[in-house]
Amino acid sequence: MLGRTEGIVLRSRPFGEADLILEYLTRDFGVRSAFAKSPRKIKSRFGGSLEPFIHSRISLLGREDASLPKLTQSDIMTSFQPLREDIKALLQATEFAELILKLLPEREPAPRVFELLLWALSTLQSMTMLHGMIMSTGGAAAGANASGVTAPAAVKNERETRERWQFIPAVFKARLLSLTGYAPSLRGCARCGAGSRVFYPREGALLCGACARSGPSLEISAALPGIYRNLSEWPLEKIMRIRPSSGLLAELKKFIHVHLAEGIAVTVKSAKFGHGPAE
Amino acid sequence: MPQGIIENLIEQLSKLPGVGRKSAQRMAFFILNMKDEDARALAGAIGAVKTNARFCKACFNITDSDLCSICRDSLRDRKRICVVEEPSNIIVIERSGGFNGLYHVLMGALSPIDGITPDMLRIKELAQRVSGNGVDEVIIATNPNTKGEVTAKYVREALSPYDVAVTRIAYGLPLGGDIEFADEITMKKSLEGRRKLD
Figure 1 (spheres, each protein chain N blue to C red):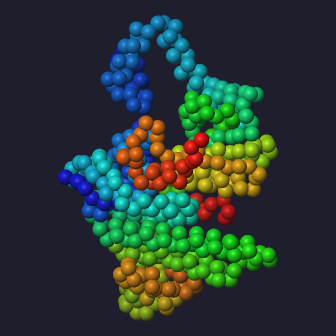
Figure 2: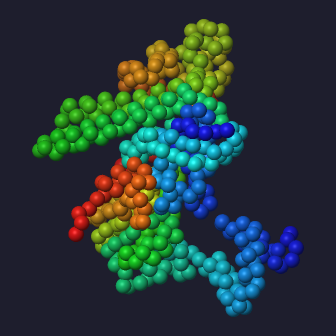
Figure 3: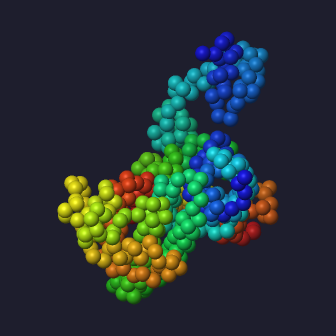
């Protein structure tokens, strides 16, 4: 029997007149779909607790092998409301949810993925709030300046915060790929063990000149395998101490994107969205 | 292929949302015993909706002519537009009697995870209406959930170049509800949206 656990809402779909089918990442049962009766009605006892990315204590009624257990209770533990109030943060959190739904098989317990998502949402929320504060302070400073020049300290802080913000998805994706068994092989040529800096996404590995076959490839820097390994292995509570240079962070983002899109053919729908009317 | 005309009617009725076989059977026998003119009026209404229903050229409400009855009504306040997700939302707002302006139906809400992007909604058409029609206020009445919220924010940004007040319907506790059962997000929004008692 299923029972009480912690869950994070990944996606919800309307069903029937006022019902919802929810996809949760749970701490104990992995990705589980659940049926919620009438949460779309104004006076529903579920209230706002079934919105995306809400971390709550839930009760699922149904057998372990039930394809659609019934959600009988949902008490919010962390609302992550700031993530739903910022379009960019919402898109980023949506990408996390989509990747989990694509890479993690349903009904397979994955407590480490649960911890990873909780860390990613918490860190993203902190950085989003910090970025918002810096932008409002920077804006005030610029407003006070007759020439319209933003205060240099605010610009520096804004840039640093943006880079830290971009670091979160890199950590999330590298670790999720490891936890789900899709990590790229970056310890020399995957066939003969010789040194190589050319990554073949379709092989998911580095290959040396002698072992290489035709197909798309990506040349990587000497620093990339090391930082990738650190992102995958360092404890989460210390991981934000890693501070890659802007160039290395950009390379890391590109590398992970190529591995996901060309290596394991995973694309996310939220990527089609852009980042709002301003861009 | 269903046997008999009643069996056929039951099967057709059970295609409606929320109607199971038992309800369909009850409806079918009710229709059988209805007055002839009422039954024909029901069949005629279904036929007319499928033949004539289209979207209003101005607001995308459902209508049987180029402009819907609300857009044609010269007594409506043309300086206010209420933005909703679906045509069915208009019926609820009209029933409340609290709004006498015009509407704009977006035909859905933004949903990054489902790939519903801004170009799939009627946001550009809203901006065009606002840009040239002397509109003072746009009230965003999308659903108070994540999709509705992100849509509201997007619409607000899309209308930022224009000299128009963009407002959002209030959040909070439903009338007749009990604070004891309110979740923390709804309660927080209710407190943020408090107003002075007159």
